[in-house]
Length: 125
Length: 417
Image 1 (tube, each protein chain N blue to C red):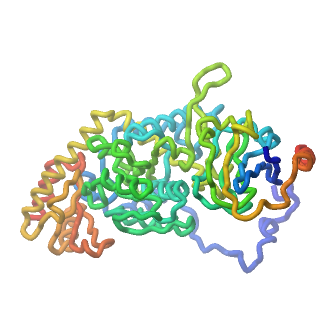
Image 2: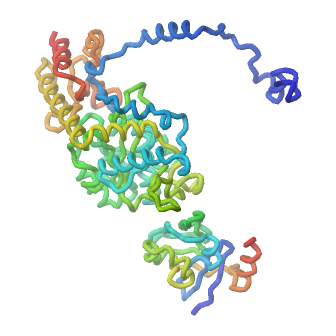
Image 3: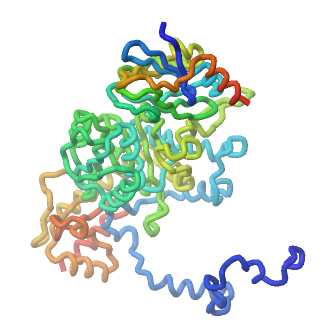
């Protein structure tokens, strides 16, 4: 299993060859509370790194989702349409959100687990 | 009071406003007593030429209809008749239930899954629906097929400027088309191939937006039945006075899959802590106060009192009543069309097309004809060439249940003389 890395905006990604799988972190799902809806793009759409590609709505808030890498959307997790709560129950597994066919390399400034945790803990209060 | 807040005069309160921007002396006459005011206002109002409902044969988006007294009796209740519509569930169950019932009635009438709490009018409803399609499909073009009300088109274009929508008139959607918008019956009163237009839109990956006459839905197929994604329209005919063109009420309904794009207020049912059914605002995360600039719409309110009038009207008339209104209007309009077409030089503009209660006629010298009618207290049809060059000399006439046979005879007598 590829190493999971994180963005400052609380998305995670794992990279397998040229394909990145994207979701939101355990910390982010806990902060959002019960997720009730995700507004996601269709496969085939091109996204730029840092672009808002969708919206995640919980009982508490509606937040934008940002692309950690640029490329073409290869797949979206259809299960989230009827079971958005998978983002809460299994954010790193069944609750994945997108697969992106990357153009270029993964950005170097993504955080590993330890430094992400440090950042998240610093921002939680 | 000035002393209490530590200033000497009214002017001291205004020191922050530069003197050059202030009006130092208002040249207004002295006030009048209530009695004198009423006399003056009545004298001014007397200058208006008011046509009787039964002698009005003009529609074009606003129609004279019979309004049962029950409508004003309910909307006039102080609990409803306030300047502000409160949405707090703990204080406003009656208001919220009334809105919920409006939504239910509109959803049933249009044959779609969900309707919102109402919009301002038919024109903004068309624009809001187009914005839904723009955001949903990610495409820019809104294709307006056939004769959409020209003022609706104008409002749509104005909305489009700020929201990156390109409005085009035409019949053929492309891969850039977000929605095909059509009016049924169209601005001239003629029936369009709503199913065909809907299928064409879907084949191009666009949404189909039907702008419908609510009364017509008592006898025509509802948009949900022919597959339209969004239905919108003007609700004035449902118990609201023509007034000066407003305030009216717009309605919008859509398929369930589009509900997150639906603009404005949406009321749902829920249960309170004791398990009792209650009414609450729902899905508010769509709205501007949460989604900010990314919301589909900046509408955070509705025309509640007008929507209530529409609800009372629909409930009071019922299915049979609405059908009767639509059928009576249909029969009277067809009888009138037949007689108008027999006048020397007059003919139906589109004899091969079907209509309900409004229809276009070619009239020789329409200006003088309409003026002659007006002198006799009759408001004749609408000259549509004003908006569409190809329709110069065409006048649309309208009949509803209020245009009784005697009124129709009066119209024909003046036209024949």
